[in-house]
Structure formats: structure tokens, C-alpha cells
Length: 437
Image (cartoon, rainbow, N blue to C red; front, side, top):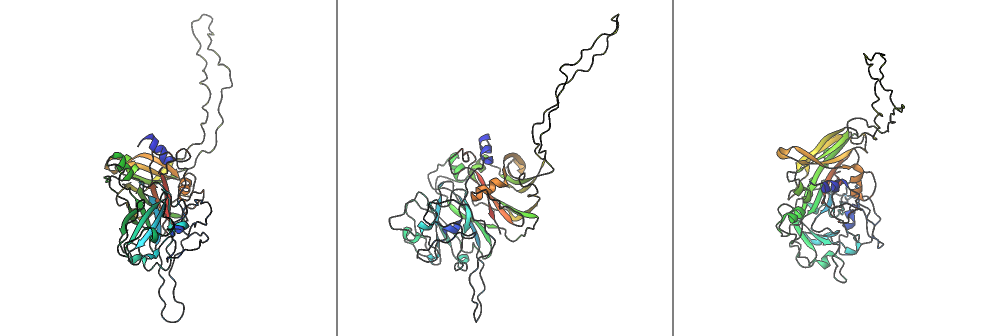
């Protein structure tokens, strides 16, 4: 990996994604009234200038379908799956909005999102956020095939058309319609891909046609890209059952960067580095030689038959301290080597537990290393602080990574693109964190 790519990995002054609760419109064909943002529902456009407030961190409260509290037999509550959507579709670098169709009843029973209610900027590249599942849909979702339509922010709906069902017409419940030009239809997620009570990441990856059947196109769109459209939505199961403790944090890793794969074709390692001991936070005073000059050796014998030994010559000033000494670090792998694959994978399948990550939070690092021949750990590709990951995820300097929860860390983007404020390309590299629980 080049010096420029390593710099891109490390420079992460970035803006993250908005909560996909904003994308969950109505469960009928009627317009809905914007709601007050919450941790679960995220941000809703109220008509004023949009503000990207970042991904909503879920409180862990399960969404359930209502139960009958009256007489007769109560219907068991259905715990809706937790779904986070990640925009890693390098071939569509703009912000995106989404239309979602289900195979049982078409648009209406799942989400027929009124486009004006979405944040104007949509979900930015590299953003991840929670998709709010209405309680009434929780029983239907595991049984339905789900087709996602990606609507770039550059798409202009026809005059007077505000809903997905008005813009993407034709087809039927069992046959998703063909969208108009400018909207990207992804694959259909098979029935049974979502289960009640589970946690998932839906990774939106790939490119439209026309990016080039060459090294640049494959670095942008994936090693198997052949200049035909390969955009897709991939369901990845996150571990929300392995329980961390008050002193441990669970971690998993997803590699969604074809650019990094092109630079590190044998895969990468994702690791945590924590201080092995204390650090030198102070600056030592410089030692000096107060004598202007040392005495010269003299010959004390009158007959010059013997010469006295020379007096010691001062060696110069004592070395000046160069500043704080970086603490020695203990590196422990989350997973590796991990490759960008189609479909991508979650590594490891069961969240790995870590202790001591928050003993010195400011010093702890999330590190990436290139894999060498034989699967050994090679050179470092970058070292990222928890604060940088949190900023990448939410767009705000808010601490949310903690013990007693599990998190999935996702690598996205192109390390050769300078991060803001230096660069303006939205596909610059970043690492975000999704809550498993």
C-alpha cells in the first residue's frame, strides 16, 4: 500500500451516516406526519434545511408487535429484527434514498416511503444506520422476499410523484417492478433472511455498469467486476447473543473496501492495540555543561621526560528530551486475514470479547494490517482512535463505544482519496461501528 493510502486510512476527519429510521415512512399509502427524533427512529425531515446528525445509536430496547391484553388468548409478541443498512456502493458515491418492496403484499405492507419525508441528503456513502421496523410489520418481515431500490440524491422524481409506489410502477407483489432510469434495482433478499429478535447489517455494495473492465474498475467495484452492474444488498448476521460484561466489549469486523483489497490482495487483519504500560507524559529538562571550556592537559615535568595524563574532556551537553514517549502497545487481533468478498462476511462469526480497551481510552487504537504470504501479519495500513471511529459513525464528537455491548466495525472506502477537510471525494476511507445489541 502506498504512503498516500496509509495517510488516507489514518486521516479520518469525516461526516457519517444518518439514521435509517428516517427512511421508514408509512405502512400505508398515506402521507405521514414527521415525528420527533428518538434513538430508535432517528431523524425525520421537517421541511427545514437538512442537518446530518449521524447514525442513531440504538438503546437496545426491542421493538415488539402489540398483544391483546383483553380476554381470550393473547398473541405472543414478535420481537422485530434489528437491521442496520450500510451504504458501501462505491459506484454510487452520492447520498442515497431507498424504496423497499416485499414479495407478499408489494409496497404498502412494508414501507412505502414518501420521498419528501426523507432527509434531503439521504444516507451518505460510508454511512450506516438503523432501519426502523414498524411493529405491525415484524411478523411479516421474516416471510417476505425484500427488494431494495437505490435512489441516488441526483434523481428527480416526476412532477407530483412523491411515493415509491408512484415512481416505480408496474410489477406485482411477487414480481418487483422495473424502476425508471436513474434508480438502481438491487437483488431480492430471499424470504427467511431475517428472523425475529436477531441483529443484521444489510451491506449495499457494488457498482452500476460502465465503470471499466480493468484494474481501476475492479478496485472500485470488486475483483470480479466485468463492467456489468453488480450492485447488491447482502444480509449479514451480527452476534447479539454472546453477552459481554461490564468489563468486556465484543467485536466483529466486516471488510467492505474493494480499494483496500486491491492494495492488500491477501487480505487484512483488524486488531485492537492497547497500552502495555504507562507513558511518559512529561518533558525532561535538558542537561548542560556549565563550563565554557575544559582545562587542557599540561606537562608538569621540568625535564619533559614524562607527560601528565590529559584531563578529561567534557563530552558535550546532556541529550534533550524529545517529548512524551509513546507507550508500548499490546496488539490483539479481532480477525484476519479477511478479504473483501462478494458476498462479504462477518469476522469472526461469534463476537470476540476484549478487556482493557477503556483503561486508557485515548491511547487505544483500532489497527489494520496487510496480510503477507502464508497468512502472516504484514505492514500496518493505519491506526485509528475510538474518537475517529465515533466521528465517522455519527458525524459528531460523541462517545458511544463502551463495554457491556458488542460492536461490528466496518471498513469502507478508498484510502487514496484524501479525507476532509483536505479532500472532497465522498468515497474516502473510514471505519464505522454498528451496535450488535
